[in-house]
Image 1 (spheres, rainbow, N blue to C red):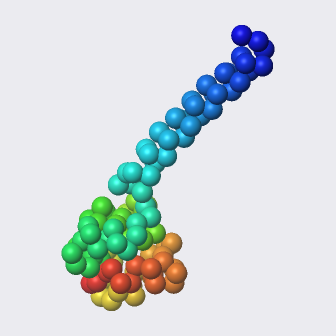
Image 2: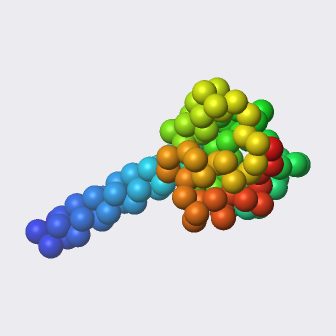
Length: 111
């Protein structure tokens, strides 16, 4: 086998391993329930009704768009410190939930 053929073989093997690594990495990090970005369709599938801010668990809150583990914990901590949410708009009192996030989650929440 000449030098050019060996180089092509080595590059081909490296390429195959890189592609396998990328495929494994992609499947691990896109097919988990910990993915914090959910589509509206996923929420409709996972919940038949709106998520109640006063009773929802951390996992239920994490179904909302742009709500990750940290923000879900902040919502629960706020609820425990201040009592029940009296209006949906009260969610904007949570650090990290501004107008943009509020508009994204509004169709999926209730009190």
